[in-house]
Length: 314
Image (cartoon, rainbow, N blue to C red; front, side):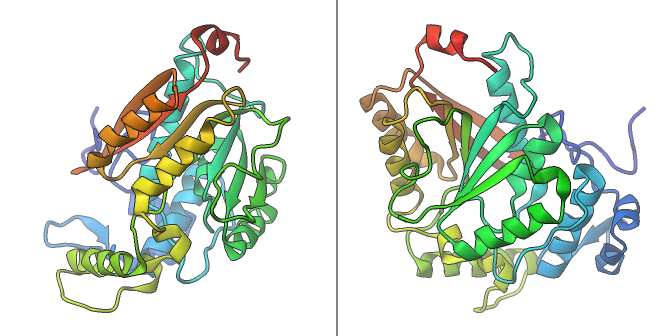
């Protein structure tokens, strides 16, 4: 029987708990503060003002309590507040990717270790991956304040303490150097790379996002949509960051099964594939994801031969 009140968002991954429209009544029971942000729109549907950062943060808190057994979670003002359903999809599709090399079985357990490049202040990918698959994570960032906030989230949710470790990247020009040590083995890396090529470009995009959500005109982006510099931009933007990641990945061919990263700009794929072929990637995949009208994707590559892939212990 179909849920008429909360129809399924068929574009989200089948294992995503948020594939149905948000049940604000249930979520408000988990986190009562959410209720003050909920209203009924002109279509007689309960919703939120998604242009209000406090409303989005309250929704995240409710989702984390209701769906991920997280009791205490917060981010400092000015840091990105991630859309949890989209982040969860990336984790679920990585699980499918690993299952393809594990006789079709979804690998679970603390022995499956993921490396989150640019964990931010929110710790979202490790929270989701640990809850759904009991995976362990190493989270890295160049922002010490972000790392400290993740430490706070972990310390206030005891089930995360043994599952997530954190490492500050002390040389911002590198991605894997200083992080992947000789004894490390990662089943996958995960990354939401800086999208923009400059602070000006990032600010314009934030203004555009707020204007689209509010259907108004403003020149001052709301702080929580602004994000910190390291979260939003780097010299050369997404393409330069991912290209650097590919060239560095060559140095760790046997220590990581799948290197992966989100790619926001579809036009970048062709050049990224050329670079991957140039450095000798054995297998390259593009995995598309969708949330409503928005299509996103991540690329995955490995240097492991077919035999090495079969011999990998999950």
